[in-house]
Length: 216
Ligand code: DX5
Ligand code: ZN
Image (tube, rainbow, N blue to C red; front, side, top):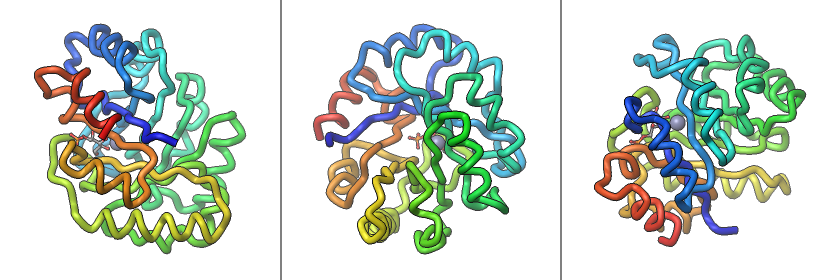
């Protein structure tokens, strides 16, 4: 399976969102990565439901929604209505993670779990069989444009082992500071999906950078 590229809309030009979405539609990108931040779980607020509804209207590729919010169970149904195909909650935000994942799947969505940089992969050893996607945060969640944390490579390798051991088909997504410099090592370690915000949207030619990541 070739690597999937998920441009993070957080870095897009919100004054020209329709144009940005159409650019992604026409590119080699696979998914739209949508970062929802509540200013409580992370020290930043991104955007909410009305913006996602606007995205849904134009996006022609799956919506990969990353919830950086406390108590995400309250909004699972809402995000399903807004077209999320993959819904990812944070391990650190869920007291009853198994219940949250079951609820996500009950709406027909793929269930993802994101791990903060300090959260060990082993935290998932008793739930890996219930997860469709693990998002390894390679920066501290909350902001785009940060530097990649090198310990991520080790975490991908550990996660890959855990997935194999459990005969699971769980996908590995990497989120934060992804560029053409680290992409090939991330893929070698076992990454299936690369999220990229600044590397795509702050580029002179975003379509070319998507192509570079896709064919690294
Ligand atoms: C960080 C978000 C990321 C971010 C990635 O909290 O989850 O998805 O937008 O942006 P870059 O690629 O600029 O690090
Ligand atoms: Zn994200």
